[in-house]
Image 1: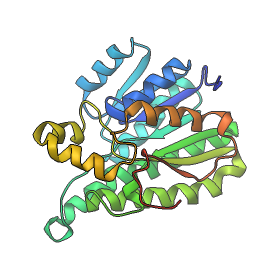
Image 2 (image 1 turned 45 degrees about the vertical axis):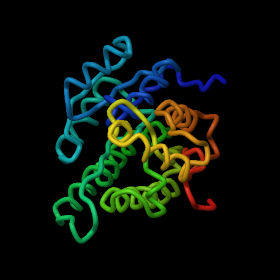
Image 3 (image 1 turned 45 degrees about the horizontal axis):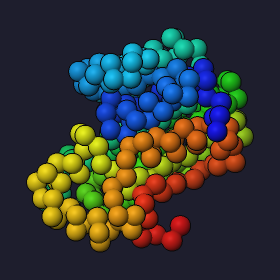
Length: 253
């Protein structure tokens, strides 16, 4: 299927590894102009090398408002338009509610939620002028059911809700907003790989019990959905949160 993404200007946060890097690869293969951003320059440089030098990189700490503003300003100066924004930056911290300091709740919301809200607002200012655009928020199946760390779940739940609210607000301006809720994804820098090395028997039992497909998902399986959602082939998908999880979610919708 030709997704007609050739020449589209795409910004991917958290794009130097894992799911973000896989998303960047798919968009490069589709002929898009891709910029990725992350905190660590070494990872960014490695990602650029791995993708054949066909991306632009920008180092930024997206928990800082000024750096988010500088990112969008720099991107627009270079590209002129923003066709696709992928809010993928995120991470988990803390543990049980009663054992987690309030600072960690604030940090989790800043990284996983407020960064996406702010970047979306900044991107929309430009997308409205061109009467088109796609914003995709990477959330989690644990944003709408129990599981995982509470700080992360809270932030992803808020992001799913934000996705629907923003989508309904800006579709009349030609801008589509959706989210992807991955299940457990295995990649080279993720927690699942570390846990598998530490306790292979326990992880195999987790897979058998929790994932009907019988395996972890791959970053590429998330990336393929992101590329489709960003394309005009998904023109009637607005405000959706799509599970990509091998059946792992317990929800009926």
